[in-house]
Image 1 (cartoon, rainbow, N blue to C red):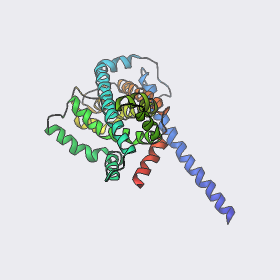
Image 2 (cartoon, rainbow, N blue to C red):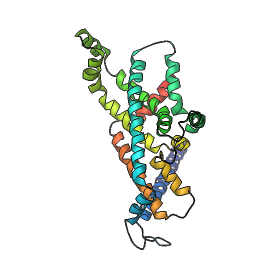
Image 3 (spheres, one colour):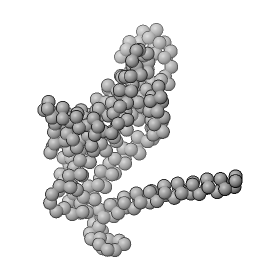
Image 4 (cartoon, helix red, strand yellow):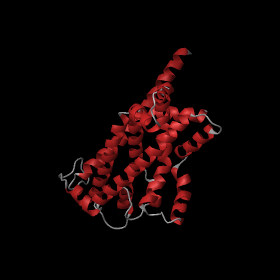
Length: 280
């Protein structure tokens, strides 16, 4: 009986690893196909393209006006990062250091944009933004991206703040440090790794956020991911290689910031913290 259970356990592990391996191979094959096609002169019915070229990247840059799209993308992204960072760090500090009635309810409220699908609150929020005249504008796109980004900063920063001994702050105040001096000289150096991790993850999240940005973006406020969507589905004939080149540019941009962010924070820490907040 025990031997049968051991065999069954091994078969189950083999099946899980086999499925995981097939998924990874399929994902890598799709990425490889897009990457190869973006450099192909012509690729039909053969294992490898007939020739190689980089002209599709230049064509995509001109056809889709990627210089403007990339500029707008980073203007929006860094504005979201700045607003989320300032408000998020202050809010996280208050939640980490103060106990007050309704604290758990407030934390749960902040977590809701991370726990529910973006379209659930994105559609009514976009409706309100259009009604007040912010639909299709730069600040409309910024605002709708701040909604999920702010809780993300708070969620990442609370554990970093809780690790700082409150007696350090108390000692600094005893020696005459004001609030500004306390933050700049004491808290900022200690919180800098957490702040950098949180803001880099917000940057990656905002670059990759399609649903919310798509709902309110106008012709001049499209981020790279929204512009890629329109390039694929808009009417007209476009070279598939140009679209793949645009996809590679988006993929490399997102991957660069993601790898950089993962040097400072582990996704398992964020998931564990979210579960802990839900439990409380």
